[in-house]
Length: 209
Ligand SMILES: Cc1cc2nc3c(=O)[nH]c(=O)nc-3n(C[C@H](O)[C@H](O)[C@H](O)COP(=O)(O)O)c2cc1C
Image (cartoon, rainbow, N blue to C red; front, side, top):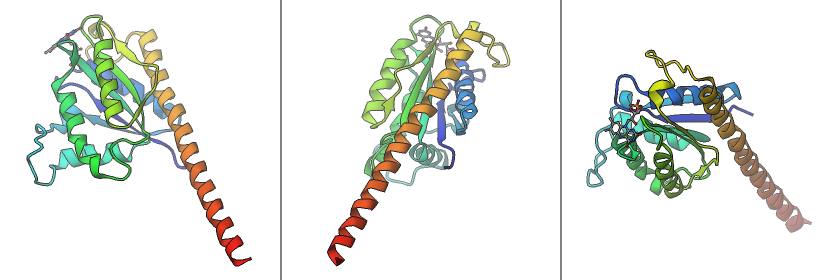
C-alpha cells in the first residue's frame, strides 16, 4: 500500500511562528509512522482574501492549498490563538476550501484531522473548538486528542526548536494518531470497494448461469 498523505496547514504570518513550529513537530510524528507529509505554511502561501464574488480561476497559491487539502488522507491544522479564537489568516485559508463544495465527494470528505493551537496564555482550547466546527462543516473527522499549546513562547527556542519534551511528545503523538485513524478510514473504504466489486461479479455470474 502506498503511504498515506498527511497535509499540515497553519502557522501565522509572523516570521517566528510557534503554531508553525508546533505543526512541524506533529508532521514529523506522522512521518515517523510512515506517512508522506506536506506542509502548507500560511506565511509562504500568502493567500489573498477569499471573495465569493470573484469568478476567476483561483491564484496558484490557492489552487495549491485546495488541491493538496483535497488529495490528503489526513490533515493537521495549527492556528495561533488570536482574540480568543483562530487567526483571520487561518480562517481565510479554510474559506478558500469552499471551492471543494462542488466536488464528488465534496469538501474534505472522510479526512481525519488533528487540531493544534498556539496561545500566549492558557486559553488555546477556544481556538481548537472553533476549528472543530470548521472540520464538521468541511465533512472531516477530528480526532478526539487535541493539543492547545499554552504559553507557546516558553515551549520553543528562538530557532523554532521545541524545548519542552512533554509538549513534543504530545505533538508527535497527535501526528501518529492522525495516521492511525486515517489508516482505518482507508482500510474501510478499500474493504467497501472490494465488497462492491464482489457483489457486482456475483450478479454477473448469476445472470449468465
Ligand atoms: C492579534 C493577536 C491576538 C492575540 N490574542 C491572544 C489571545 O486571545 N489569547 C492568548 O492566549 N494569546 C493571544 N495572542 C498571543 C498569541 O496567541 C501567541 O503569541 C502565539 O504564539 C501566536 O502564534 P504564532 O507564534 O504562530 O504567531 C495574540 C497575539 C496576537 C498577535
